[in-house]
Image: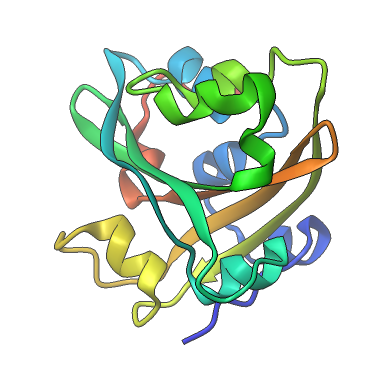
Length: 183
């Protein structure tokens, strides 16, 4: 099933949980917000960093050709060893030219740490969606976990010197349990 990505004005109408709302609609670094708001030890649990073909929606969004290989990074953002966010980054080969090759060797370093400190990076758009149970992103995000409901996500296109990369962040239900949230 396809994901119905929407702009902020439409998506925000369906979000009732104020904790989820805070994280989902953060314009800055999600990693920084989690580090600031969640009590405990933050870390990145790297699942995958490899060259692979993007999913069909990702190909369309990044204007990739069929069978075009991209660099894909998948990880969980965790606090106290609890999975809060599944993150998936898709980087086309032309984006990785010159000094951007370091993006393929981040390991457990947060991607946001690199993107939000680089003056040559801009965020073009952010879209939001409920991710249906039958969607590949849902299955990847829960990784055989026991989440049997739709989960929320967002996708952002960043550009580094006009070359795109896609960041998808899927918010697991445990994000609402971060206990150092102040309003």
